[in-house]
Image (cartoon, rainbow, N blue to C red; front, side, top):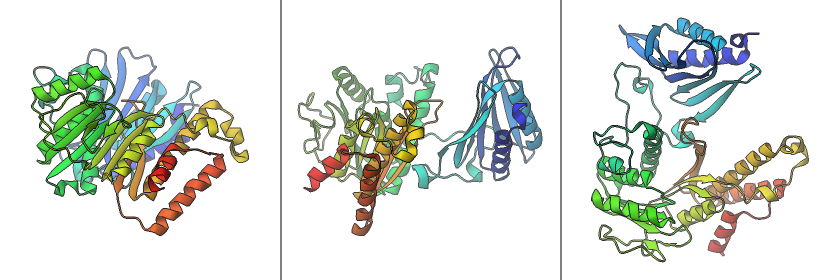
Amino acid sequence: MPVSSSDSVHQLHHIISNGFAAGQLEKISLSKYKGSEAGLEKIQIRTVYLKDQPMLSMVYRYQTRDITKNYTLSDALAEITRQLDAGFKQVNVKTTSTEYQLMISKKGKPLLTQQASLQLGQNGMQPKNSSQTGALHNRAKQRYVEQSRPFLQQLGVTDQQGQIIPAMSRKWKQINKFVEIFANAVGQAQLEQHESISVVDFGSGKGYLTFAVHDFIVQQLHKTAEVTGVELRDELVQFCNRVANTIDAQGMTFYQGDVRSFNPESGSSEAPLRPDARRESSSSKVDVMIALHACDIATDYALHTGIRLNASVIMCAPCCHKEIRPQLKMPGLLQPMLQYGVHLGQQAEMLTDSMRALLLEANGYETKVFEFVALEHTSKNKMILAVKKQQSAKKQAAILEKVQELKQFYGIEKQSLEELLAEKNG
């Protein structure tokens, strides 16, 4: 039976048709080509207007050339169907609200999944309407960081002509997506009303996102930025401080340390690298706390620090979920599913981050958990985003009760964030 006759493909047609009719279809890509046409690698599709009529423009990307053809909706659906039967194994569809992925297994079985919601109420993204969907030819894509900014060249993202270095294109997309989320969280927390915005980035690494956040605050919001990067690796701390000095990034400093050693009262780690003349303030106020890819319980320490400092926004991308899995007891009903190691690991990860999100909510935050970068760009892309919001004592108590119910159901005895918060309240 051809792939095109499956229910999953019919559902995909329905999704594309609805998105196209509503003006909410952003892009479609066909990839993982296994067919016989020489040189063909992928097909990229977007909406265009020709003589005021919406069409679907399909760019056939070959190894040495591109070919563009424009189709009506019905013809485009037929062409997508034909290409699936001809050898494409993956289709990604992005609308203004949702991402979908169709994967065809080695046995030829299609599987359609919904990957991520892009609405502000789900993941902090700004919603878009039909007038913003990129349907016009030559429409410039909105960037939250200008490609010409000096820090990008210093960090090796752009060359001397200000062009994106091909090997850094994924990093460039990640930077812009992260700053988009940051911008919307800042707006939700109404931080743009402040004269200055303070940010602490734990595990800042080479500083790609740290510099981008500083640049956005200064260049886009026109506010004073107080941005601190905290990183364990001394060579990266030295490097980032040199870059900050080179571009004269006022209010920006990098310190050697981690979330446990950082002292917010002095704006440094317990053993700071050196005093820094660029940082004029030593205030302990933190508006935004960032911790991306903090390993295992380092995520819990970072979240606890954000709560303890009463940060208006907490942005955390956890990884290496090790604490919960050894404790996890298989509930009888779930035993047939969790007996497989990969499922047990996924369940432990989901349980860990769900408990973290609930504990944030119990401490006065509106919390979302979502994928912040498309899977094609990075495999570690889950974000916990929390924005300060008043919660009634009754609602907080109800949330804490849910945490206890989850612990009891899965036999969990210890969760680090919960213990840290208990010490804080004790």
